[in-house]
Image (cartoon, rainbow, N blue to C red; front, side, top):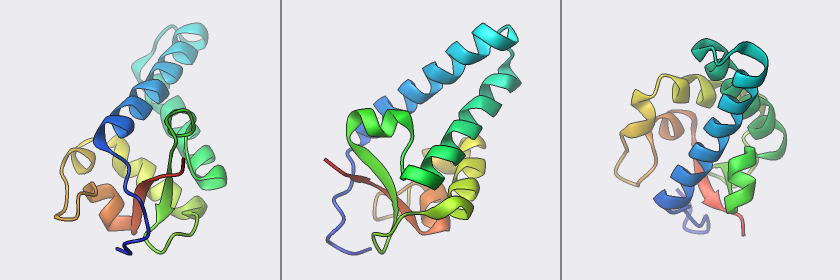
Length: 116
């Protein structure tokens, strides 16, 4: 991974995930009676759309981080989709590779970096 990408600290990544999940839970509770599959679907849809278009979810934007390819470019919609699907499986997200990225990021050539 290039040394020019400032890696996001774990604390910011966790806070961003909690923000995104709480938004998904709120939408699910308001429109779907807090159905767990609706919550997961809303979370996945928000992640794919926002990471694929602006390079970060609402939580990412709030805490100043974003998803980038390891070469620094935007991840694009296909990497965002693959990353989100793996993230929803949970296990790839909790294990890391030696450079500190989660497996789902390493598999798709992405990383979470500081953007501000």
